[in-house]
Image 1 (cartoon, rainbow, N blue to C red):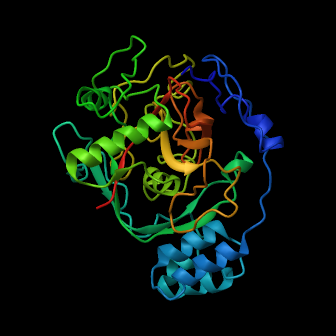
Image 2: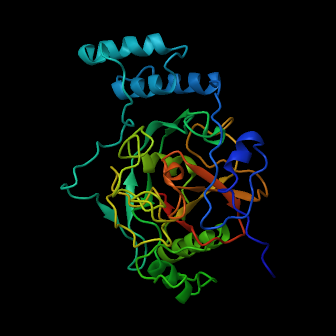
Image 3: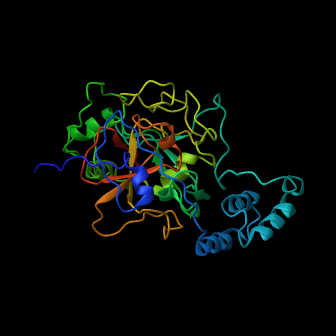
Length: 352
């Protein structure tokens, strides 16, 4: 059966900011999406109250800083500042700064040893354990479909791929009969480069094959799990800070004016605080969730936001053919679940 023509959301972001339900258009490699106008987003009192009820009886200063970062003028802001003052009097007298995610480790130095890795078979992706915690998901700095910023609490640990799934790992699935599609590399080479030109169904075949092969519960990460892990305890636009810096990500304009024509080998750039590579740029990564035009009504527990027979699924992290605005930690896109595109790949997750 012939596939429908490619439809991609990255070239029509400005239109989506005006009409949230229309977000599909043809993508050319040399074209960049137009910037959408910023829009103020009113707070969701229900989410604010639920988040406050989770943290109010805990003696964890980072929880109250996270609340104040999301709701600086919220209904519990005075109580949060009072709790901070009681927990850390000297620090509470200063302006409250964005805080690391509760339960996550601080960013390691570049000289420190990497995270402990789990690998269930010789050709399986290496995984990093992510502990439970709370964070503020989304952003109001760019586009309405990344908003509102809202608190999410993940109550269970999970494992996530340290790298994007590589061609070497994908080809092992094809050779074993678990994946039907021999994804092309566009002449750039295979091996440690991230597998690409994959649709959401292809990604589901791969995690199903890993589950059968290992007896473990592999899956795609939920959108909340992906952002929680990609931020690695940070609250800035990028995990390394508030603006793009050379030498951190592979995208068009990330390291100079020249366009990036293809993905590069995974792990070329420094990892994020959790030891994950390429959570900004390289290839865009499918997650489990259906596309929704904003986070209004999104789950607050980190679970996947799904609905019956959804045509569009979410991609996170941006890719080599996006500019720096679209590889931020909060950046999100949509694409038809059954259409392949040369910049789309995946990162796996697994239940412990």
